[in-house]
Length: 298
Image (cartoon, rainbow, N blue to C red; front, side, top):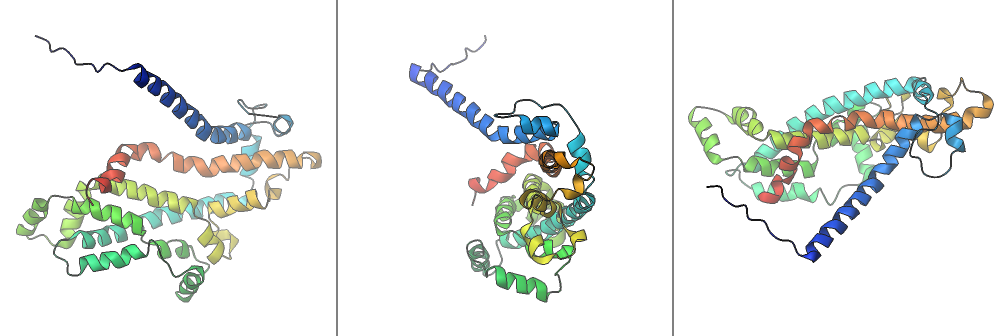
């Protein structure tokens, strides 16, 4: 005999609440997505037709790839892409190694003064030495004008460290004890037991670090003097803030320079944004579980 499904009968108030809530969320989603849609459509528009257009943009104005072709004429763009990819890959690997080792240490139950050390580390989330001491430390270490100045000083993020610490602490004690009985040391326990079990949190932390490195420009502005070492975001800042599109509009007529330069800016934004957006679908399945683990057990 089939069991009858118990359906909760909603009141008129609940139904209206669902309708209003759904409508507001759809509107909020449109408000959040439209700026990106606008930039995308503008980047594929004909420069002159786009500049003549007024109001909201819901379709391309004369479809054209010219903005992207002009953007890649900037010799700094490809160089900065390579620099950013180097910083992201090397930086994330170093971040994960250091953060994992730190989180493993803080998650052990038999470490003396563990809570005191954790408090000192947490304090750094709220107080820092400031920008000037930070600059002198980096310069004193000989990292100035080196891509390592974008990697080593940000080797560990305290917030990410605490998330990973909670994830490691949630691993059943029995797994660690069984490994110890088999003669496993700390490195074996960390890399063969703790990390595989915590892969959801590791994936989320890797995403956090990757996005941070990809979007970072301030440290590059402080420490890099050689333009050949500029990351992508610093080149993007020059193009958008300083309106420097001269190297990408050399083939345009003098009367069209302003029009071409405007759409090139949108093309560069898309070029610098799409790669990091492509990472999200591969990590999405881990995101909720990994990010929320700290809310379950602290």
